[in-house]
Length: 468
Image 1 (cartoon, rainbow, N blue to C red):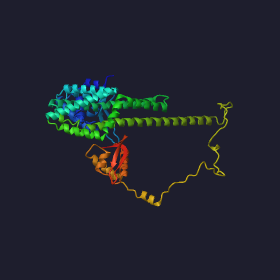
Image 2: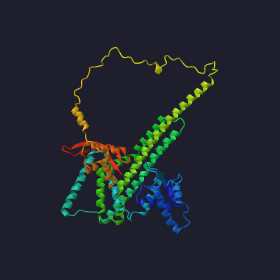
Image 3: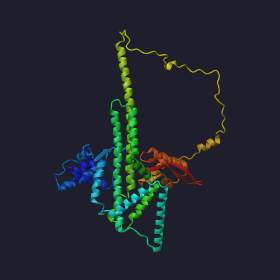
Image 4: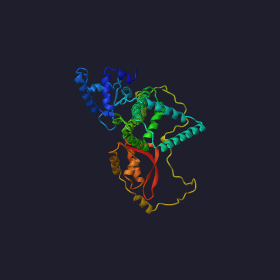
């Protein structure tokens, strides 16, 4: 079976399909589109095409979308989001690859980054060699050479009063290359998500096999998940997710992006592309979808195991009913010969064999009697009752307000915007809000936050990312 990208490029209406998918998803850099909105876009798109060729595209919009989602084509994926009654559509990995290839053929604003690409190859090879050598003397020699080269450059700039810069061509070449890398990065998420879906499908197939046990199903799932995490795609994805959650890296990226877009030599067509400007937001959406696939895989496993337990119970119940039916059938004329023989049982235990509890005549201490060092006084209990009352509802409004201007926001930014009045208790409140809403993310890594006050305190808490 050919790759879906090849099937798409070889299809009878390849030009129409590729043009529409690019118009609906890539032109505005949308990861998902609701069904009603996508149907409206397709209707308008087809009307324009039919004006030029009235008999070219006879099918209705719903038919086209249905065909593009079936197993024979796999151009789009249709599914429901949580708490949503309307389905959404997203591109499959095959469509992503086909569109990426078409964009590469079209080029980026007419720039072919030969010099920039060659320079990146040299730098990549140099970085690879530097970070793979285990020879301490060689590594020190490389760093000393870097130090000497940097010192010479500093002296040269100070002496001449001129700082060398890239030409306009070099700036546009490198920016176009960055745009291309960003497009490829967004497209690669579909492959990781497809791998997770294949694991979920394998769980269902193992469940369907006769004689499959819960241990076998669970073992297959854990092995497959471990394989995915240890794969090149898995390692790269989880490393990427850690970088994306770093508020320092995101702020540095945004600052650098603003400065680059302010360059006068940058081509206007490259500058107008919204991809890099919104890249952290797009990456966060794609990453959450991958994590969502992992969560659905775990949910599927729980359902499989629960259904297996239910099936076992039903089987036991059926056997008991069969035994009862046979017993009733032979009640009036029991068989003379024994139906089956039971081996010798030394002693048979059931619940009624257990004796009732009797109070012992005396108590023997197992050890020394321990005496408490202190007791809680009424004043201390009163202090506990006077703890500040925090309003989770007000804190939810704080989160909603700060997210009205940003797609994502870290816990540190919320604490800076709304300084805690009651110290660590408010921080715990924000953690509760993040954990109770699945759209927010609570990472496994930790960070240090400082709570201001007469005596500022520093706490180690999980890394939190609030999302719209």
